[in-house]
Amino acid sequence: MIHALLLMTAFNFLSHGTQDLYPTFLQVQRKLDARTVRWIAIVYNIGDIIGGIVCGVLSERFWRRSVIAVATLCVLPMIPLWSLSTTPLMLGLGAFLMQIAVQGAWGVVPAHLNELSPPDARGTFPGLVYQLGNFLAASNATLQASVAAAHRRPGSHCRRGARDVRAGNACG
Image 1: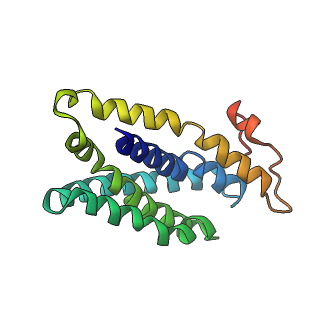
Image 2: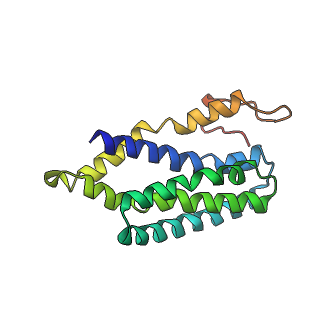
């Protein structure tokens, strides 16, 4: 149970950490307009779908843990392209590739959780550990906003902190 709970907590931090405030990041830090951000979001959501399907299929052929590990490790080389690029095209490509990897790992999670489930709790165990992991990772947006506020670059017009994000007033 502890292993599955820690796995779901980490996965929720990973997926929500790469998606939830990314549009705000694009508008505030990269100064992109709402239309461009919308198109980047559409593109990275297509990457979500592709990654989940491809890795889900691969996990039927190869060990699920291996597919999860490889997809998760593929996130690391995407970080610079996803966060440090300066053009919308490269940011969109980085987000697309990032979400292929992130959701690729997630595509395997339901089957993996079923395999980790005790036989007597197979119907409730996956949902329970997913929800508990999500609960433990719920502070993710607040943590990210706090770090962003503490490390804002000179010249950034963003002066709001985590309190404003919790209230729904993200910089933008």
